[in-house]
Length: 588
Image (cartoon, rainbow, N blue to C red; front, side):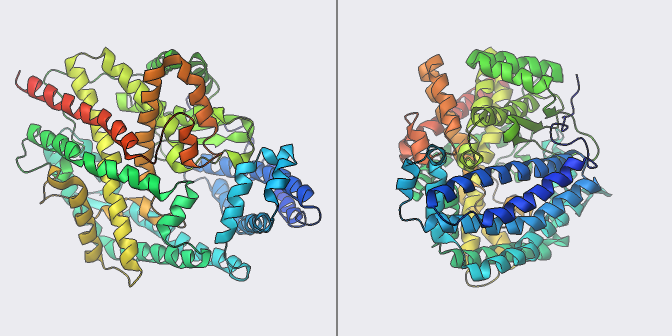
């Protein structure tokens, strides 16, 4: 079986004449669409609905071919050239999108128009959101220039940050290694390796701290300028609007997270105790592997991982099991690491083809199997949205993680149920290690970014001020779970999420996704097979309503802190089990 993905459903190669045909068609259609917003409003809206759907299909096809190629062939020049052409053209597409939004916003009888047309009913939520978004459009006189300037402003600083990160070499034990390689040693079984790599990493940031700080200051400064131009009260309000989420929901979740922090700190202190630390866990041991004596973690071939996923997911839904088999059999997955291929994992939708593409870097651990389950959850989410108009499949990030976390939780529960004592301990540790990042560290990132944005209103922040804000955020989040003497003052330089131009607070949606996915899984545990159709419908509706309304469809009130508390209890119970097993096993 082939374990590289097949992109021929898009184009044969970069010499395929269909690429130029599609690019030309995209340019012509975007120009033509400008003239469709005239005459009878119903006809104009229907014609624009068709035009924007076709524009979406073409941009997705071209962009996916370039992006997916670069994901596995980083130095592919034709792919980069196509990507660059699309980036330049994106300004025109953004202007078209704004013109359309502005037109929708001008219609006083929008609800009547929607009610009179089946085509418009199919995109009703999108139209209503555009009418609201029209209130936050820039003045047309400055919009084009703002978009063009962002290419050499926020976008350029974001790219610079990535280059600084990718090219930083760390002096580790007398040799120069990439930053990513130094950070990867945080998982090494040798405690001295972890400590040496951490100290070398921290020291290395001195080489890039000034330009990194300049990048962060510039990107957040541009964000503050942009919200003035788009009439939002704050950057957080803009992010919530983009996420189809309200402040009440965010506050409810953050309240429950703050209440749960003592439990996570208890887990961290216990891990520190196991590793021989008396005053909290040092940062360099956050990801230290721990397992009982005599336990060897099980490893999997990709064939074994495939069969395990099909078997476990089929118990939830035979349809999902068959879908996973389809993904493997039809080469939707690029499995193994190789030179030129990016790290990590992701899932990319090919909506108009009712397919997805999944990238992983599989090495055989249970964590790698879980990553496959996670990304195939995204792919299943895409399948559940098949046939919807493109404007109705854009699930906001907080909901976009629902199916992936659900799959991870399902797989973890199955593994725990089948595990003997030592394996269960190792599984609990792996799960809690990752969940601590998603809840505790994400909370620290939210606090840090909030503080940076508030202070950036007055002036730029120095390197030392950024380090102090990061340490303060870690204190509020990790507390006595982490050693006060060994934290990470440069996490602001390490995490790319702070540097996304046009997208701030790329943090709390991760915690939302983790806890919402766990809450949805609890619904399945309570209701069994009868819940499956409701679950699939929930996934289908993620881009078709406000988050609170989508959640309400499966009986979840995300505006209540009680829902988030119940989700967090799942992990609090795991922490208690982890500590009890640790005491038992470590005394054997």
